[in-house]
Length: 306
Image (cartoon, rainbow, N blue to C red; front, side, top):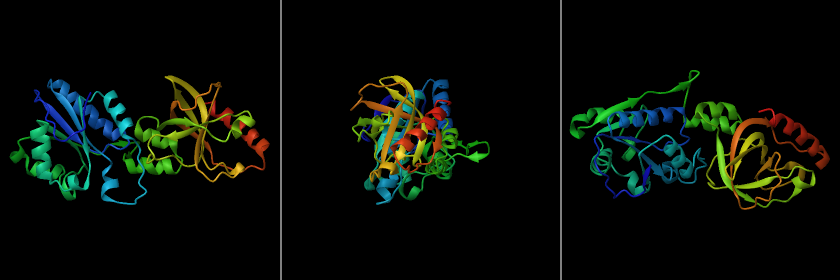
């Protein structure tokens, strides 16, 4: 996959360049339908699949001081796009200046002149250009002006529940990790680095790796204990993870800690990925560390059943 991070580079015209546009936060099942369609069309026509996305997310530029959280970082998006065999990823630096580009200029200058687009594939609720004036209706009305083919993707659903990044966020905020995973079509995950903690877990025979996530704006699921898979140095382990404030030891800072099963190596400063499988329980304050240890034994048994 070729990655372009400048809006001044023109690409070569192929037999058939098919382009889609979006923030693609979460890259859920609805998004995957779009990815599958453009790669299939490109291959059928011996052409190139092109995906335009924006970074930072437009919400951070257009709405200041909001608490909006991301489902996917740019690095995560790049990895998933590559796995889905996108030929060209065009990352636009989204700014206030860029937000004022009209839908006409977006199509003319970027889609046609820079990307040599023959066909555009667009979601049913996708908008682009100044004041979100560009959409499927705009493209259809100006089809003859732009001389470009248009494909619209309808709303997708899982078990009659419409798929959206908003619904996935709601599930994660409420701790419904399995429901979020179902709409994503994959397991929700976070990436980070192992940093030093206070060592309390080791004292009760449940050593934990403290995680500093790579993307500070990444959405964390509801505080509590989760059964997870841990990816470390290209190996996968089972584990259980706690998100929260560790009320038993009166910690005032929110932490992310994972106990990796059947593992005892020193991994400080190592890269680590956490894949969420199932929520086990809410965070709880115990009378003492011994009571906490008893609960962790129960939690571990539940996590080992996944």
